[in-house]
Length: 341
Image 1 (tube, rainbow, N blue to C red):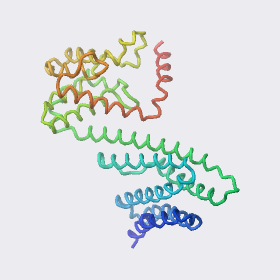
Image 2 (cartoon, rainbow, N blue to C red):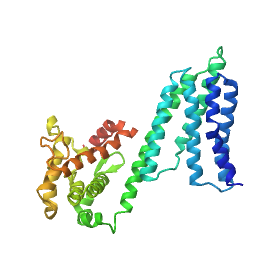
Image 3 (cartoon, one colour):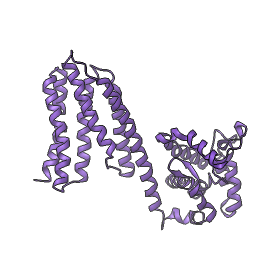
Image 4 (cartoon, rainbow, N blue to C red):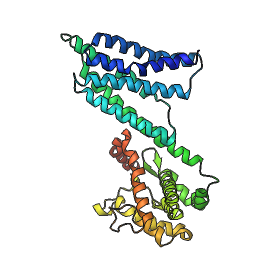
């Protein structure tokens, strides 16, 4: 019985969704507010009881998330007809839901974050104020202020979910390498002292060059293996595509625009790879490294494997754009410059 009660409370939020929509369509807002408040209370109680009775489960956590989303979507769908600002809350919540589904099926990440729980409670408070604003026409309720607060929390939550996904994915890859075919292919590179220095080279926020190329290399290897392409060259070129000599963040020398890091580091990585790993290099791998920054490179990728490396590198690199601390990039670079002096 103790195992069933929390899940039944969660399930109630799913079962009454059609009733909520019916009440909203028929403008029965008083009944809808009381029902929504009761359901919000069940959201508090199911987790509380599950922890109290020590009956928390993965199924219950998933059901709780689905129940919250169904309740929020149904209420927001009604409110957007009375206040169009709620449309943005609905869209952001939809994006969060889609990303969480993707993260779960990609990396089996299903745990909630504290900011996500806070965001859920703020959404329900905002929704409640939205309905009260409809009923109490002559009372000034700062609904739009709460809508803005909700949207900011949703954006912050999405960024944190993306960051958790990136960290989890990197950790999973690092843990699963040894005693695999992939590890046997790249082991001499991964254990090389010069290559290991890339752990100290910052690349994107909260990620070193070592972490980045390892992710790219492993993704390329898996795609090449699945597509029956030259997966060994993909694994090697993936590791060495950013094997440039020194961190670009500490380079403050003024250069012409086309001589900046983004345009030149591919050729620098190729030459450096030839210097330290000549036994791994061949015409194809050199070409893959040299053209991986296309279209910033003049040379067009020549092989199918080259295109895979180029695309995977772009896809993995774009993750960092979602992190809020990337906004402080200019400030951090100025601080590095001062220290360098």
